[in-house]
Length: 287
Image 1 (tube, helix red, strand yellow):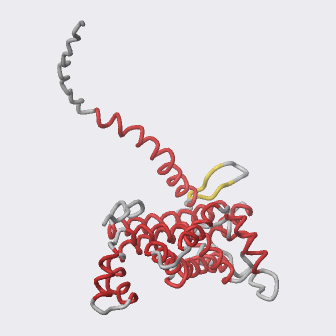
Image 2: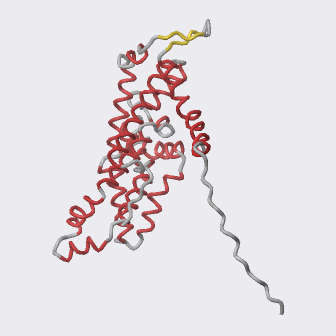
Image 3: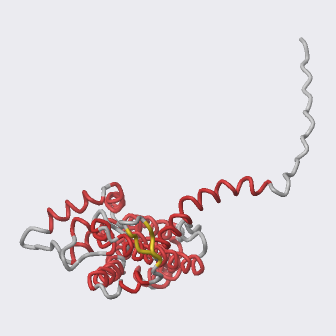
């Protein structure tokens, strides 16, 4: 029988790239970043600093006049106040974050026989379009005897339902990263389950819960698909206000208010990154 000789191929020599090779990889990302984020943001800023003359098709630079006019408009002030208050109330402890934490704890520690059903219910709003969810809330809570249409309550309930999956996903990941034996140790020493949650889970999950709070706060401030169907004359939000300005053709004030919303979001993300780490929006704690 013929014998096949196996020979080892000579090891190839690794050749380092030139000094410009990193830029060959970074340049496409930089072009996409500038084209899809920096340029639109700067264009919005420029548009907010000018007035459009439709007759002569020219821009007239007016500086910060469009920004100074926003606080004098009571409709804008009311929309901004409503947006901040209702968003904070929506993700406060008794609503999204508290409910998500309770469901995640029950599911993770299997405190109920059908805990998996709770997990499905908590994640179900993620696949429901916002306008469909708004129609469902309108059909359920607008007619008497509740008659909540046009009130802050129906918006808060709708926002809490819409963003519950985000809070649940982060709370569940944080709880699963904590070994349950730490809670068992507290209970062996005579403490109850509530003491274990307060003394063990709460301190360890503090950073994760702050990150979850911010992850819900950011999209809730600009939610439109749900708010546009449920708002009333006195419950207009910022996203609805932006849509109204667009329909009225008030593009200068629209750009000014939109840029303020963009700037505030970037500031919040920057503060969160400095406090919680650059990857707070993606990180999952490991036990």
